Length: 330
Picture 1: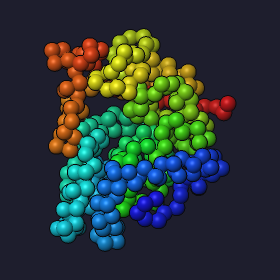
Picture 2 (picture 1 turned 90 degrees about the horizontal axis):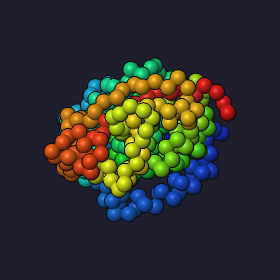
Picture 3 (picture 1 turned 45 degrees about the vertical axis):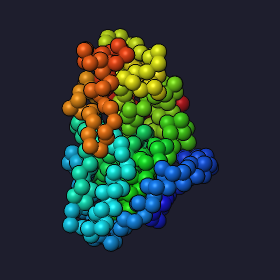
Picture 4 (picture 1 turned 60 degrees about the vertical axis):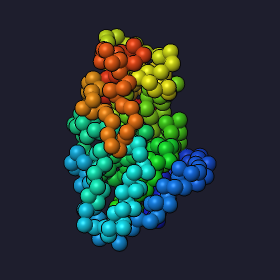
């Protein structure tokens, strides 16, 4: 809660949230915001104007491919320079695209392509309480705001992702959105809280993906749905790759499932009516290096002689999304 006063949305969900545990984690996490990365970002952010200084309300568009905040003429020249420096300091940009007071941010992932694949499966969002686990820089959270949900909560432990969300909220001050620096391992603090949960791009980083999905299911109300999306491999049958060391040059990858395996993980976790929403091969149209993410990306992660394999010789990554429903209380 760094830059403006707003109600604590988790208090509003009490007693279905373990607030004692949430406060303990918050107190533990707050200290690392004063480490160099957080301190330097905060110093820039605090030079930016707040909502009332740049027009009220600040223009916004969450319904298009680009999450757009403000207009190019809203900021003074020196403020625009600070914003440009701030955007640069948030490198590497993973999810996007964004346009902030006329400044374009071209992220590594064209996240709008994934959104277009999964959005039809989410159904009506108006009035829903929604959680996005592993929300990153909140791109999908803001996309959901176009449909007037009751509440959107994002979970991600990353300092830069949290501070970017707070930067945007410095301008917009949307009262029914909140970012908590919690990880998937903290899902147990929620009991029957949400109508919809998104869990995208984190399962293959988990040592026990089925337990994470079980905890995700328990965070939903009866009748609630979860959209579960993961890096995957092609192939028939319920199998998961367990890399010897790295997968596509990433160290922290444990289980990379086939489509059928992801479906069965969801079923074993207690979800019902599990359906495949999308199953596509990742291409450099969707994931690539840009001026806002200058590190290696998909093209460097694959075998240069055979694009169907990773640099280690494993099957190249696909992305699979499934949706399932919590039908019962245990």
